[in-house]
Structure formats: structure tokens, C-alpha cells
Length: 298
Image (tube, rainbow, N blue to C red; front, side):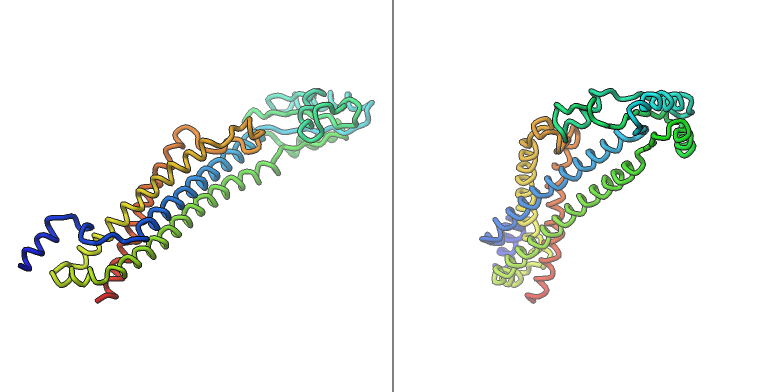
């Protein structure tokens, strides 16, 4: 009779079918996995978007420089010509051109509006400089410009590029750190749910041991159930997060303030990696909790 019961329990049905439903721990596991994965999708989207934005800003300043000429109205045209002549004979400089009033108006438009009377304001003259990639002597160029045009100030954008590059790397790091913390939180919640389920089924575990079930078999029943619940919840959370990102306003509608927010191209495949990772986290957390609890129930 005992052997017949063992055969029916251990061979005629899957391992997790010998464990009764766990009640509130079922929806708690799925909800936790879904909510954490939903947050992870947004953390991933924000970190990638912030990194792209910082790289775009840094790329716009890379291989470019600016000469600012502040002089009296009667001298600014002469100094502009002198600066352009110096830049034209400087090795490493591909091109240089003075910005017109319309271009300077567009630069100031976000702060002062479209009808700014640029021609009547004592604004400095700006010259856009483009490098050719071979490099140039910035300090020597500054000295030559000072000698030819006392009102000229050369800015190679170094003080802008370095902070942006640092911000890009740190934003990526913070994004991955946030995802790691979300994973640890999910592991902690699933561990608590697994412990509660094991404690609630202490009598069932005792009966299984009486008929010869090993702890590995009992643990496998709980691990399989919680892993599948976590995977299903994480899949729903990932799809919800991707839908939320897709519904975000476009760059134009958002005024380009958060340009590039979301996923682009193959980046949409990244959230699909999160449900399998959630399943692995649930598997590891539940397995560790199951064997630990089973040792306590001896």
C-alpha cells in the first residue's frame, strides 16, 4: 500500500501537484514580479535615453569650438576679419564662419522669444570653428587670437564635453544599479512568499516525508510553482512597461526636452530579457528558501 501511494505521488503526477494551492502567496509572487519588472523597464528606458541624450550633447560639441568677440561696434567687424584670417591659417582647423544675426536670434529664442532685436543689442559676435580631426594647438591659437583681436575669447568646449561624458557613464551606472536593486527587492519578496507557503504547508511536507519523499523532491515542487508564477508576472509587467514607454509623447510633442526617451530599434528587445531573468531570480531565491525552511521543519 505504501509503495502504491509512493508511486502515485512521485511518478503519476508532476512534483508541484502534490502541494496544495498557496492562497495569497500566489498573487503576491505574480504581482511582485510584475511590478518590479514594470519598474525595471522604465529604469532601463530612462538610463538608455539619458545616456543617448548626454552623448548627443557631447557629440554636438565634439570637434567644434567657438570664438566670442566682444568689442566696440566700430571694431567688431575688423576683429572678426582678423580672427577669421588667423583661423584660416591654423593647422587642424577645417572651417570657421561668423554667425549671422538670424542664427544668433535662433540661439537666444528659447530664452527671450522669437522677436528679439539682435541688431540693436550689444551682443558679442560668435564664430563657429570646426576641427578636421588632426588636432591643433589650442593654447597657441589663443595667444595668436589675443594678439590679433584683443576682444576675442576662444572656447574649445572642453569644460562642456567632460561633464557630459561623465554624466553619460554615471547615468548608465545608476540605471543598472536601479535594475539590480529592483531584482534584489523581487528576490526578497519572493523569498518571503516562499517561506510563508512552506510554513503553511508544514503538515503536507510532514506527510510527504512519511511516505518517503526527499527534501529535493519537495523543494522542487515549490521551486517550480514559484518560478512559473514569477515568470508569468514578469512577462505581464514587461509588456505593460513596453506599452507605457510606447505611449510616451514623441520628442516634438514634448518640446525636445526629453529627446530620445524610450527604446530605439533593437533596444525594444532588451525588456524581453527581463522575464527570464526574473524567473532565474525566483528560482534561486525559492530554492534557497525552500531548503532552509525544510531544514527548520525537521
